[in-house]
Every structure is written in C-alpha cells, then in structure tokens.
Amino acid sequence: MNKLRQSMLMLPAVFLAACAAGPDYRQPAVPGIAHFARADAGSTQVAPVVNAEFWQAFRDTQLTNLVEQALSANNDLRIALARYDSETALLREAKSGYYPTVTMSANTGHQKLSVDQAYGFQRSNDVHGASVNAGWELDMFGRVRRDVEAHRAEAAALVEDLKALQVVIVGQVASAYMDLRGTQERLRVARESIDTQRETLRIINARLEAGRSSDFDVARVRAQLESATSRVFVLEARIAIDEHRLAVLTGRPPEALIAELDVPAPLPALAAAVDPETPGIVLRRRPDIAAAEQRLHAATARIGVASADLFPHVRLSGMLGTFAFRSGDLFTNQRETSLLGLNVDWSFLDAGRVRARIAASDAAAAGLLSSYQQTVLLALEDTENALIRYARTRSEDEHLERAAVESSYAVQIAREQLQAGTIGVYEVLDAEREQLRAQDAFAEGRTRSAVAAVALFKELAGGWPQYPSASASLSTGIR
Image (cartoon, rainbow, N blue to C red; front, side):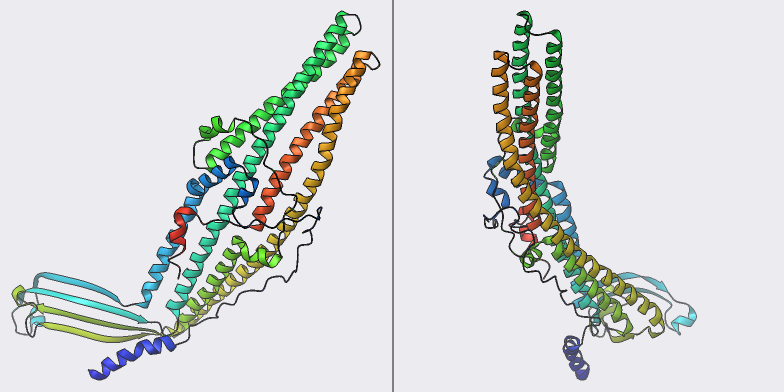
C-alpha cells in the first residue's frame, strides 16, 4: 500500500515533465515596413497621433456623449460580451481536466437473488450503500494542456473581437454625427439659396411691372427656385436617417434623439494632419489583427489535442464507500469498501482516424495563417487608403472654400449689373446657380473630410477604451 501511495505522489511530477503533443505556437512574422508610403501626403505639418479617445480631439461635447452612450448601451457590444463570457465558461470547463473528478452516490433498496446467485445464503435482502468516487485522467501527453491553451487563445481572440467592435461602433457613431452636422450645413446653404432666389424673383417681378423684363424671365426664375426648394426635402430626409442611426447605435429607439439633434451645430474642427506612427506600431495595436493571431494560436493548440490521441489515455480511478444489509450498520466496522485502479486506454488500431483528424487540424491552422497574413495586408492597405483620402480631402476643401467665396462675390456683382441694366436675367440666374453649387460642394467636401478623419483614426485604432461593463471580466478569466 505504501508503494502504491509513493507511486501516486510521483505521478504529478511525471505529468508535469511530460511533453505536450503537437507543435508549440510561434508568432508569425509581419511585414518589416519602416513607414507608411502616404504618411506625409498633402501636408508638411504633422500632428501627434491621438493617444486618448480620438473623438475627444474634435472637442464636441455632444459627440463625446453619444460615443460614451454607445460604448455602454450598444446591443451589438452586449452580444460580443456574451460570446466572450460563453468562451470563458468553456475555458473553465477545460481547466477542470487538470483535476480529479469527484462524485458521491448513495442507494437503498431491496434485492432478491436467484438460487445460483445466493450460493446457499439468504436470497432476499435489504441493501444500503454510500460511496465517494474519483477519477483522474493523467495528462501525460498534453491533451488537456493543449485544450486549455486552445480555449485560452479563443477567449483572448474574443476579447480582441470586442475591442474591434468598439472601433466599428465608435466609428459609426462619429461618422453618422459628422454626416448629420455636414448635412445640416448643406440644408442651411439650400435655404439661404432659396431666400436669395426669392429676392431675385421679387426683383424680376418688379422689372416686369416696369416693362423691363418678360414672362419668360419670370418663368426661368421660378423654375430655378422650385429646383432649389426640392433639395431641402432630400437633405431633411438624410438628417432624419442620421438621427435614427445614432439613436439605435446608442441603444435607443430611432426617435429618441430627434429633439436633441434637430438643433443645428457646426462640424467639429479637424486636424491638418495626423501622425500614423509606423506600420509595426499600428499592426500591434489593431484588435482585428490580434484576434486573427489568437485564432491561429488556438488552431495550433488543437493540432496538439488531436495528436494526443496517438498516445495512451491513462486514468487513475478510486472508490471509497460502505455497504450493509441493514441501514444501521452503514459506516460501522468491516462495512467499508474501496477500489483503486489504473486504466490505460490506447486505441492504436484507430490511428488512421486519429491521423485524419490531425491532418484536418493542420489544414485549419494553415488556413488561419493565411487569414492572419491577409488581415495584416488589408490593414496596411486600409491605412494607406485612409491617409491619402484624408490628406486629399483637406486639400480639396481649400479649393472648394475659395470657389464658394468667389461665387458669392460673383452673385453680388451680377445683381448690381442687373440693376444697372448691363446684363440680363440669365447671367444672374447662372451666377446664383453656381453659388448654390459651390457652397453646397464646400459643405459636402467638409463633411467628407470629417468622415475621412474618423476613418483614419479607425484604421489607426488609437486610444480605444475598454468596454465599461466588461472591464473586470476582460481582465480575468483567460489566464
């Protein structure tokens, strides 16, 4: 008995010294690119990248409030958090394989044996029993360790998925907010144009009464006025859609923010340029890349889980209990019963099926390696695109602003010349039409720049906070 106990004490040491089946995970290499090709596109003034929450850089209190509400109440984030909680529960289940499984049982009843079973003893008896049973699969070849490693990596991937979803949600909130404010500016321009053209119509009607214009001139002015008025309804619909989107992103019904957001406000100020740092820093910071890497890690560990089936399964089992024909005799002297055993299960004849599972795990890991590499390349592409798009929209804004200023000056001159009789109505209408087009283009261009700024920060993934209600859960449970 003492030798058996000594052997049992030595088993944990053997278990810890044993090598885990399958390959050890190694982090894949990323492209060694020193800098982004478009990092300095369009500007020599470079501002530092935002290290805190990027939306704070816009200095818009309403935008900040909307983002914070979305991070705490968005239903898509809650779904992602539930997925994470589910995986951490599976991780705890996998870890239980490190320890013995202990169960308890008790029974009472009446039995009647056949003559052959009784061997001359009493055939009819009451029976009573109670026992504690324990079983422990010795992880000598690392099946449990690899399974825990796979679940830990999968849980870590879901943490990164949650962070990536934060990036998406905050980006959607900021983009919708920028579009809302930009469209409100375009609506203001359209309404001012309508007022301008109504004044032109008044002037033309006065000239008609004085015999200096014709019905043809009046009809053309009215046609342009109606065309300008029609734009209002399209812009109002777009504003309503943005308001509905922002409400749902913050976890509320579509109509919840109408009263609050109907009050016009200017577009937030934008930085002249943003320092993207280096590709290596950005790739290490992006949660979508981290999630792809963790899934590759999990797939590598699952190769070990499948490979462990090539080796014997060693299980230690034991039972300690009591059995008696009378309930009062339970737990008395000489009523104890016990069992201690070592079971070795090695299905070596099933090696073909096991090797097929290993091959499937190898193929899955190879696919996830390619998926990781593609995620890295797409991240670099998206960042380069965001850099050039932001730089070029800012340059476009400068020219559109000058065009808007010059078109307003042209309308002023055209009206003075119309009053002086040196030009006709057509030239005035053409100048007003160009003014509306130029001012609307400037407002739309500034909106594009704001949305491009949001997209750039999104691709850089700089300064994303932990999901508030998940912070405690995310920091534990995957060790």
